[in-house]
Length: 90
Image 1 (tube, rainbow, N blue to C red):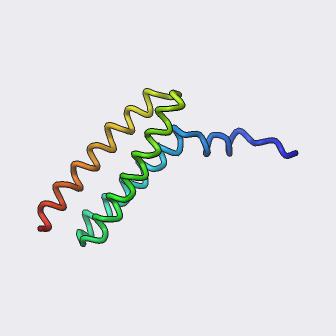
Image 2 (tube, helix red, strand yellow):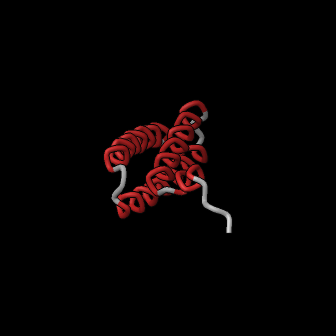
């Protein structure tokens, strides 16, 4: 049986998945800012939803909570910016 390498374990870890989800939300926010079509904003909101699910998983595991909390705060900033953009588009 192949041993799980440290790297793949780390990639699958809930706090790592959450951090990656937040980074993806950030990229989609930047894309929405430069291309503020409704679909780009919608994609960013969908990613935030994924990230929030990843946050719940990371919180359940209770590891790396300082990093998880920092990412959660950053995710809230991203969400706020998207809400502002959505308001400006209507």
